[in-house]
Image 1 (tube, rainbow, N blue to C red):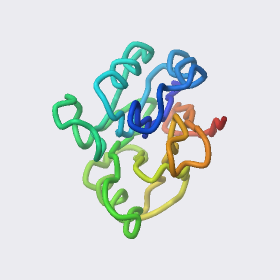
Image 2 (image 1 turned 30 degrees about the horizontal axis):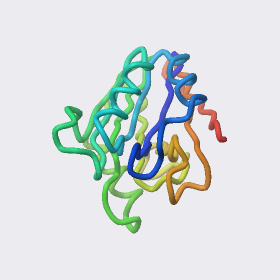
Image 3 (image 1 turned 180 degrees about the vertical axis):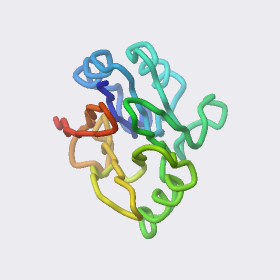
Image 4 (image 1 turned 135 degrees about the horizontal axis):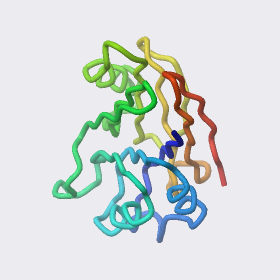
Length: 165
């Protein structure tokens, strides 16, 4: 199972559009996880048009009526992914994301937390969980560049590659 992890697209407030290479990666994935801050219904629609299957959450700048939850879970390949935006101060970010991950963790399989908000790529162990942040798919400030993560998931294991442009 090939998952594309992306987030913080911020279209149109900070970026004009989602880059074509990101949309190509979106279409090539089996499933897509978006960590929020689409910024607009049009950005969500663009991702949905390209994603074979989409799991998405609400970011702090998203319209409340976007129709996605604040926290979502996805179980694939023997792994549970807990998706949250991570809204709040940078201080305490890892603790906050680990707490949400723990609240929605599976008892019978590996659980991985996926979040956004900071626009900074991360792949860290914290609070007993692997926490992933793909950065900003559009390179929206304060991201140093545009990035996504590709996770290969099988038999309860996850390998992650970061794609940067």
